[in-house]
Figure (cartoon, rainbow, N blue to C red):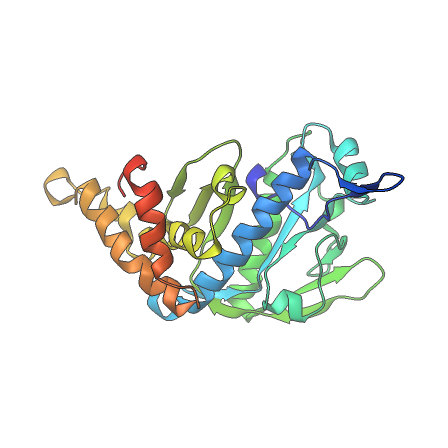
Length: 269
C-alpha cells in the first residue's frame, strides 16, 4: 500500500545570482511524479474501458495519502507541508474529483461524516488505515454512487462517481516490473520516470489492465489441464491493449514502438 502514497509537488528552482538552476528532485518528488503519471494514464484507460469490464464500478479519480504509512511520519508531514495525516495524493485529469475542485495536497478532514485523522494507527508504516479509508470510499461509491469528502476549512461535498473498469493503480518502488493481480495494476517506477512517451506507457498499463478485464488471474487458478499457458494470456493481453489505448485516446502505434524497443527484454511480451 506504500505505493499508493502520492501528491502533486512542483520541482523547486533555486536562483543563482545570474542563472536559475533546477535542483535534483528528492525521492519523494520522484515518487510523486511516478504516482501522478500512473493515475492519469490509468484513469483514462479505466474510464474508457468501463463497458468492457464485468465489474465496472463508480470511481472519482482520487488517491489519498496517510503519512503514517512512512517510517518517519513527522518528517514526511513537514516535507509535504501538511498538518494532518490524511491529504490528497493525486487527482486524475478530467475526473469527478478534479471537476469538484479537489487538488493534490488538500488535507482531508472528513469522510462520510468521520475524520480519518482520528482513526487509530498501530504504528509507523501502518498501511492498513489507508487501506480501510479506500475501502470506505469504494463501498460508498458502490452503494450510492457518490462519496462525501471535506477538505480543510470546508463542509463535506458529495462527489458522484463515473463508471470505470475497477483497478487500483500502484507504483512499485525501485523496480522495472509490471504486474496485475486481478484487482490491481502495478507498474515499476523506472518505467514511469523514464523517457517513454505517454502512448508507449499507456500500452504497458493497458496490457496489465487487460489481464484484469480478461480475468487471467482466475484462469491461472484452474486445474492444470484447463489452465492457459503464460504465453497465451500474454498474447491475449497484447491484442486487447491497443484497443483499450484507442478508446482512451492514445495512439495504438505506441504499442508497436514500445514492443520494438522493450519487448524482447520483457517476460511474456
